[in-house]
Image 1: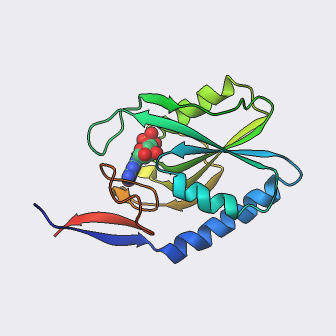
Image 2: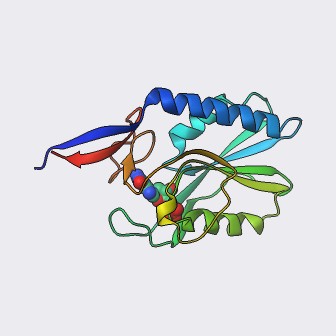
Length: 176
Ligand code: 5GP
């Protein structure tokens, strides 16, 4: 079996500092309003857990959306299947979709289309990472953690065949 090693791309401290900044910005922008955070599973569960604690208001509802995108290995096909829907309607609500990474943009584009049919008051996107080199469809990212190069990253919720999600930092898997 090949030995693998994960090299650090974004450290725990770098991520924590950026999440605090995003949380402060969101707190300011949504002042006096209620907010529904929609965490796109599984990849954004750790980011959502940290982000929601950096948002300083009691008016936050957390929802989870299970999504499966069909693709071979490390690439997406753009066909998105909802495996677990929201627990309550979002009609009339201010919705913020929380994603781990926007890669081709196909997943977010699909989710924005889907959610618009449910008539929320507003809908925005917060993504921890963005890989602009792989863009297939331009999507608005209202709150962005980091722009990264075209590398397949793992950790902080992101997996490689369901492994590495529990790494406390974001890294790149390398064969030794
Ligand atoms: P998109 O539809 O924008 O191409 O891809 C979105 C999804 O593909 C992400 O939510 C994530 O699950 C997966 N993905 C894209 N790039 C990476 C990556 O570098 N690492 C991991 N672990 N997943 C990725």
